[in-house]
Image 1 (cartoon, rainbow, N blue to C red):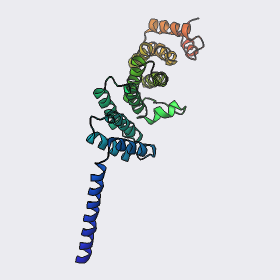
Image 2 (cartoon, helix red, strand yellow):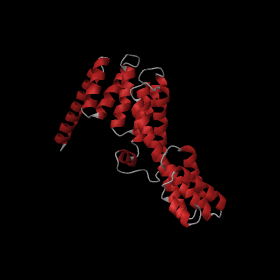
Image 3 (cartoon, one colour):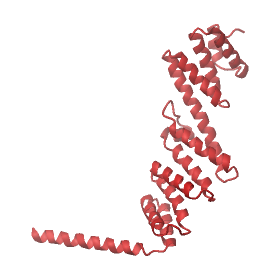
Image 4 (cartoon, one colour):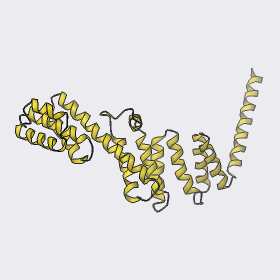
Length: 259
């Protein structure tokens, strides 16, 4: 037994010595090799190794010409590795350290992608599968802010077109999310809450299809609250802007909309 223990100790010490030798060799690498090793690991899908090599590069060459590039590539590696918070922190750090760098538009775009993909249902709906359906929208709103920065500040960057398309989707998704909440309130008899949600959609998401639902639900909620004049005014606005709306028949049957 003692002999076996000695063997294991010898093997363990040898392993540690080997690791130490490898560590020392790695830290004699030039910055270019660190960077290329990190990028190679990234391309092969070994994101953990990519992050490690690029962090080592920055530690050994914090002011070299590869350091800034390593910082933004690390952010992407975190994103691909599913480490959303680390990816966002890395993009923010890059922007803070290099506010005039040509890669700043990409940093904001990457930040938007990370937030956009935080919610699985957002991805599914973007490809025609699902939507938020009343879930927490914090990540979607954060993505909208990041993409909006790309579009406003860097309209000629290569990322602006895709950012704008994703913004359109997010605005529509957030509007529909509010309609889902308003519908729920209506079914629960919370008509004031229904009106407030519908008003939010009308005021902040004017160019989305959800406005039709907002006007229809609002007219019905006003009727349930006994606010007949407001209900009829809202119904008339709906009829003028959406003459084929399915809500109009409901409003006519309830004698809210008189033709």
